Amino acid sequence: MTMNKIVIIFISLMLPLFAQAAPEFSSENRGPVEVTSDRLEVDDLAQTLVFIGNAVATQDDVTIHGNRLTVKYTGEKREIEKVVAEGSVRILQGNRVAVGERAVLYHLEERIVLTGSPEVRDGDNFVKGQEITVYLNDKRSVVTGGAGGRVKAVFSPKTEEKP
Image 1 (tube, rainbow, N blue to C red):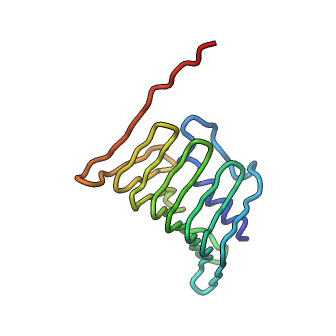
Image 2 (spheres, one colour; image 1 turned 30 degrees about the vertical axis):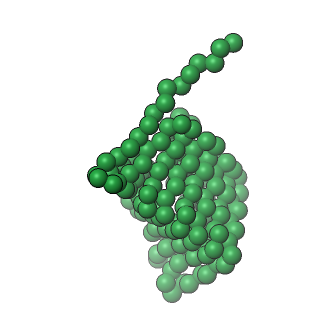
């Protein structure tokens, strides 16, 4: 599996974080993925690809920033096991932003876990806690409390524009 395909899969699996009111996305009809970083380390024995230093992956309108992006694969077919984004993680799509210090995509479980003061924001709406888990197959999320065991969420009503 090429690095391009690995990053396409990573980004396409991160999209449901942002697909609240948007149509479902497929990596098959998406544009090319561009990944930049200060360095890339490929270790076939450890079965990892590591993008180090100012790692930025962009596909269409989705951009993922992190200090480090590690892709762990397994087997002869190099199937993705998990993808870890670390250090000042920021995922952007339009007005939607997810931030944290670490995001882990468990590919086989189709689950994403954001930690390190995670917050997901869409315009004036946001949710934050100690950990945000997104279950991709179930289209659901679980947020566990941060300081004092509390979750904080703000949902602003949409205002109608006058003609």
